[in-house]
Image 1 (cartoon, rainbow, N blue to C red):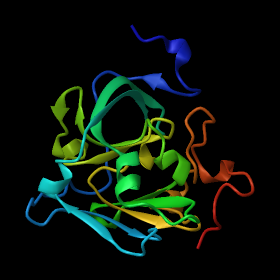
Image 2 (image 1 turned 180 degrees about the vertical axis):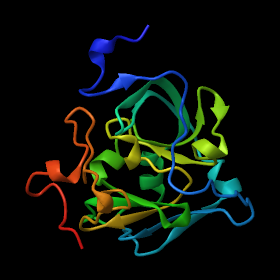
Image 3 (image 1 turned 90 degrees about the horizontal axis):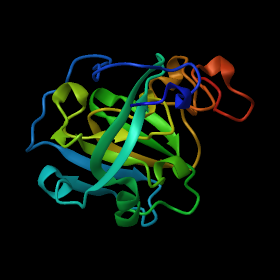
Image 4 (image 1 turned 60 degrees about the vertical axis):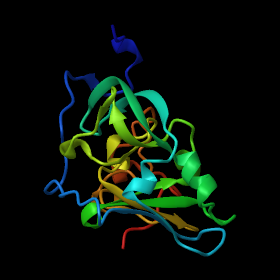
Length: 201
């Protein structure tokens, strides 16, 4: 039984796993699918994995709640996927990298700080509760960052850009908090303190 008292501020439990996303569900084409790491890599080179290569990467499992900025919490999810630390080891960032931009289908993006991306709780999930993700929930891969609201964990992820300075992603440009920490209740950009995000373009 989940204890309501340990919910982050402003959150409420929901049953099931509601699917929410902006725009249509993309069609998966295995022969065209590629996961890329680019930007400020240590070597200056781009790195990429085809679908068959990506699913051969080792899996880890993390049990974590999912918190939506709309105040809904889905507790106790068992996520399995590729640890982001594995990606960082295979495609190291340059020493001056501070943030990553996570890129997904249709040019959707989310920016997070490097230390959050590198957390041992962060992973590129392929499974939830032992079952492969459905297309509506991000198949073949979605980013899971348990300490941040779910808008920071895009579905249908296709690549990671290493950045030496911060840039706002899709929802961050549209009024959501640039950092998005759940326990600090960082929901909207008007809550940002000085230094918590770049200026709006």
